[in-house]
Length: 224
Image 1 (tube, one colour):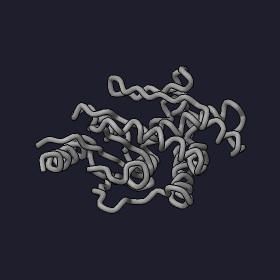
Image 2: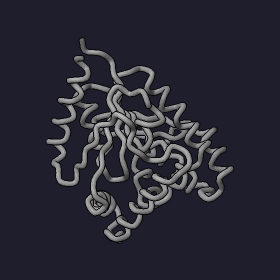
Image 3: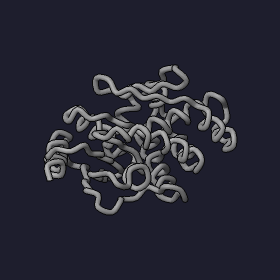
Image 4: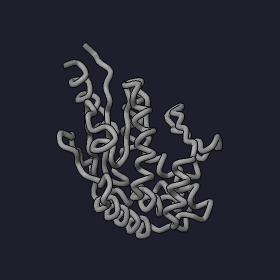
């Protein structure tokens, strides 16, 4: 019998979590939950208010902010206090600071509450750096995606270069390495592979091939 399930996808920056989660959600008709977009939204507002280095103020911001996600036509639209910030949260500036905001325990606590609430309905695909270990530790399917630093840097460079051609590949690679260090060593919800996760290194794998493989695995579990 097909059952309602929760799919959680984890992995480092540039590992293809968002791409995989979106495609799987679309194929299955599931709700897509982009947890990383929430941290980016907090980071954007902290930058706008000049408080990105003031932990207490960032915590107040996280506790008072109104976040809403809408997944439409393959795109996660992000709203902060009714203002759409979908494009702004993907800037290089936000990307360079989001890991520093994400290490704040109180910020994570607030956002995890929201993420779990979104997951109560079932039949969701959630992705982010602690979805398999903290947000949805009892997910029916846990996936850990990874790729080499060089490959992940190339992917992010292509994304950023479309918006800002002054950014270099080396800058993006250094940023990825910095985020890996911060995400893996933080005291609260560090990046790590959860027990029972299906791990895939997609450094040399085409996206369509990866998605087809994952969909087969998901259907096997749904029909058990």
